[in-house]
Length: 95
Image (cartoon, rainbow, N blue to C red):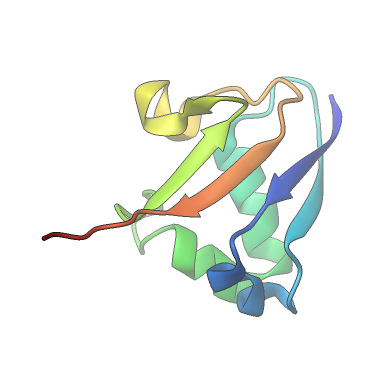
């Protein structure tokens, strides 16, 4: 498959040395879980901010694969197929 770019928000950049983009090399057929495994291996603090102890995506983290949010696809089993990823924290608010 090759390398994909993972874009990070400023709020998470401190967990990986200030980087706002990570490049992840993946084999053919790689899934979102494979991407997160590689991120966790290289940046464990960032990995803990993205997934809980059971390996599930934390509820306040949204990951977009191309233009689609991963939870609306197959979650962690979603094939990334060479698409770049964007990680965004959920935003809550009220009036």
